[in-house]
Amino acid sequence: MAQTANPVFLRPVAEPEADTGKAITFSTPLALDCGRTLSPFTIAYMTYGTLNAARSNAILVCHALTGDQFAASRHPITGKPGWWDIMVGPGKAIDTDRFFVICSNVIGGCMGSTGPASTDPKTGKPYALDFPVVTIRDMVRAQAMLLDALGIEKLLCVTGGSMGGMQVLQWAASFPDRVATAMPLATAARHSAQNIAFHEVGRQAIMADPDWNGGQYYERAHPAKGLAVARMAAHITYLSEAALQRKFGRELQDRDQISFGFGADFQVESYLHHQGMTFVDRFDANSYLYITRAMDYFDLAGDYKGVLADAFRDTKARFCLISFTSDWLFPTPENKRVAHALNATAANVSFVEIESDKGHDAFLLDEPQMLATVRGFLNAAAAENGIA
Amino acid sequence: MLRPDLAAIADMIEPNARVLDIGCGDGTLLEHLKQTRGVDGRGIELSQQNVNHCVARGLSVLQGDADTDLAEYPSQAFDVVILSQTIQATRAPAKVLDDLLRIGRHTIVSFPNFGHWRVRLSLLLNGRMPRTQALDYAWYETPNIHLCTIRDFTEMAKDAGAQIERALALNTSGTRPIHADAPGPNLFAEGAIFLMNRRGGAAWGPATGRTGSS
Image 1 (cartoon, rainbow over the protein chains, first blue to last red):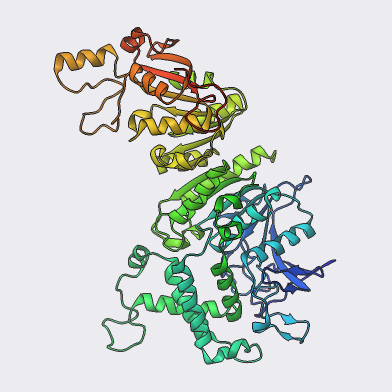
Image 2 (image 1 turned 90 degrees about the horizontal axis):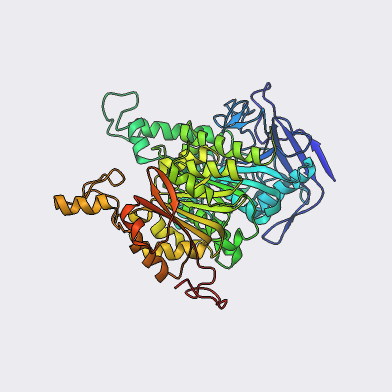
C-alpha cells in the first residue's frame, strides 16, 4: 500500500552529489484533526546508520519549523551541512555507528512530503490554501505510518528541538507503547500567546506581499519579500539580546558612519537581510503559514481536559528534557511544566537546563553540556534496551 | 569507596526497588544502588550543575527543591524515598517529612546530630554557635537553618505519624543500631539514619485500621 520513490522538491537540486533520500507515498488515507483526510500522501525522509536485526536501535529525529529531513547530511538544495550535524553522525552524541536515525519532512512541509505546494489530485494543480490545516498530532500520525512502512514497531528514542520537541511530546502521548525514551529540547506542551503573536506577524508579512495572491503563486513569482520579512522577525526570536550584542553590537556594515537613510547601516540589519534572502531560496511561503499554524494550535493538555499529566498517564518512556537559560521563546519554565506533569504520573524524567547565551537556537549549536547530556542519556537507554 | 553513611543507607534498600533520592548530589548513591541493587532510581537535586553531571552519567535526575517540588509527586509512588543530610537545610522540615512519608512506602532520612556532646560542650565552653567537622559554617552563612538533635527528630517523626523501623547512630567509626528514644545516642552519635514508614498512618489517605507508632 506504500510506494517508495525519490522525493520531489519544490526547488531544483543544486548539489547533485547530495543524498536526496527517499519518499514513500501511502494510499491509505491520513485522517487529520480538522476532520479531513489526505490521500494519497507522501513522506520524504532520510535515514542514517543501520537498523539492527532486532529493529531495536531506531531513533526518530523530529525537525523544527523550518527544518527538514536533512538532519545529518548535506542539504541537496542549499549545499549546507545537516541542521543537526553537530549532534547526529558517526561517533557523535546521537551515534549513527550504533543507532539507526530516521528524520522525515513533516506533513505540510516543502521538502518532498505532501504540503500546500503538492499537487491536489482533484484539480491537478497545487493545493495552495485548499490544503487542509494540519496539526502536530497529524505530523506524528504520518510519522507513525512511515515507521510502520519501515517495519519499526518501537523507537529507542524520539527526539527533537522546538517544534520537533512538540512532536516528541505528542509521540509519548499518542503512542506510549512505541517510545522507549523521549528527549524533547527547548520546547513546550503548548504554544504561548507571545509565540502565537510572533507567528501571526510572520503570516501577515507573507499575506501582505502582493505576490502571495491568496496563496496562488506557484505558476508565477513567489512572495519572497513577505517570506523574508517573516523569517527576519522569527530569526530575532531564535537568538538572545546578549548574543546579538556580542555578535554585532552597533557595528556598521561596510561604512564608516551612519548614512542618514534606510539602507542597511548596521551589521545586524545586513545579517537579518541575508537570513531572510537565503531562507526564501529553500522554503515555501504557504508551508510557512501551515506549519506555524500547527505550532500555534499545539496544546497537549487541551486534548486531556486541561490536565497535562493525563497526556502522559500511559507512558512508560524515560524522559530527558533539556532547556537553555537564554531561550526566551521556549523558556525553562515551559520545559519545567512538562517535567512537573511527568512527575505527577511518577514517570521517569530527567531535566537539564543548559547555561548558554545563544537563545533558542542553542539546541542546534555546539553546546558541550547539551551534547554530554544527550550522549549520557542515550548510553543509558542503549544499555537498558540491550543495544551494544 | 562509598561514604559510610551512604553505604549504611544502601544496606537498607531492597534489590530492584523504586528509589527517589532527594538531594542526590553528583549521583554517587544512585549510581551505586543502580549497579549493586538494580534499583529503578530517580533523583532530585538543587544544583543544576550536579543535575547535568548525573544525567550525563545516565541517571534520571531533575533539578528541583525539596521544599517546593515534592507536592506534585503522587502518593506511594516509590518503594523508598531518601533524604540524605539535607533535612536540616530545608525551610519546612515537618512539611518535607510529611511529603516523604506520603510519597514513599519507606522513608530514609539521615542528618547531623546537634545533640552530640562536642556540640553541646562547644556552646557551653565558648558561648558561641558551635562549628564542628560535620557542620563547619559560621552561624550567619550556614545553609543548615533547621538543625536538630536525634530526640528532636524522633519527636517530629512521631508527630508526623511515622513508624520508626530502624534507627542507626552514625559516627566516623561506623554505624550501629540505636533506640531512637534512648538518651545515649543523642549525646554520642555524630549523626543518625532513620528508616520509617507511615503505611498505616491516619494522617493521610484511606484509613487501614492502624495508626502511627505513637
